[in-house]
Length: 167
Image 1 (cartoon, rainbow, N blue to C red):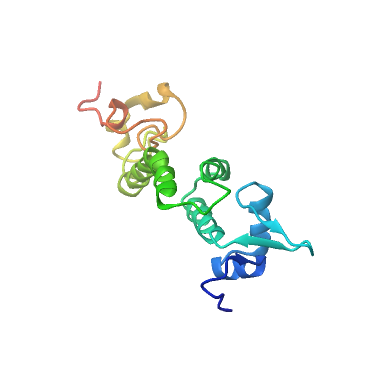
Image 2: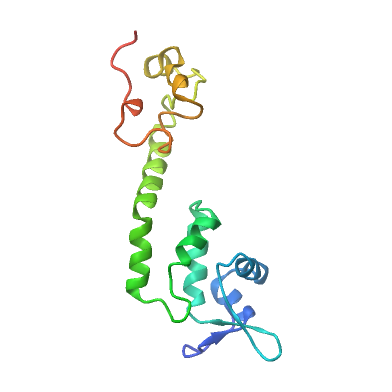
């Protein structure tokens, strides 16, 4: 890997790609989607501010945990374009995402911990399904995995607690 001097203020697309571990085509894609900005030199070459490395890392991590590009773009639009975002800027972005990230964490924990139990999907194939979802009553609430999907069943609501008796 080519080492970019620590005091380099702008990176070429190749330098940004190499240092971030993201393909040049992905950087171009991010730019067309408004997630990343560059300036053009007199020779029409892209130059990225060094803080673009943090933005690319943020985009990649957010994508990796399943956050849609539109949501990522909306978050990045809250950061200043005219200067390098400060710690406070990133803290505001983090605070705005806290509840969504907490929900994702809860959903991943439910998936990890409860997939071997009845999830309320209506299949009734596990031995616990008739107890947790008698007669597929959760199907009356709508489609999907009613007991595991936090968008359908927020934490600590009755649809997520197995019934104590079968009616």
